Image 1 (tube, helix red, strand yellow):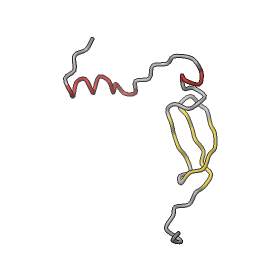
Image 2 (tube, rainbow, N blue to C red; image 1 turned 60 degrees about the vertical axis):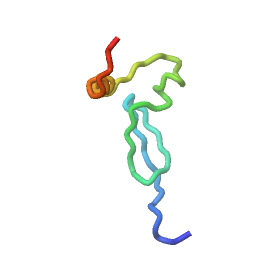
Image 3 (cartoon, rainbow, N blue to C red; image 1 turned 45 degrees about the horizontal axis):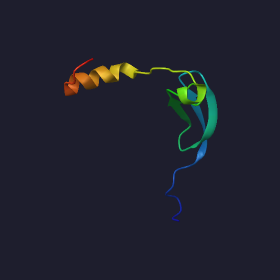
Image 4 (cartoon, rainbow, N blue to C red; image 1 turned 90 degrees about the horizontal axis):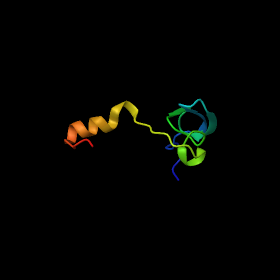
Length: 68
């Protein structure tokens, strides 16, 4: 491998929208996520609908789909 061309691989803090914090390793110091394993429906067993900033409505408006 060539030297001095790869980014630094440092310890990183991940912050979830639910308030969960955990550390991992990445090329950046902080990562902000909307859903993590502590609040994801697959891991919690609870159903949760997430529509960030009206993405479905924006898609329907742009591509002309009919609403049910």
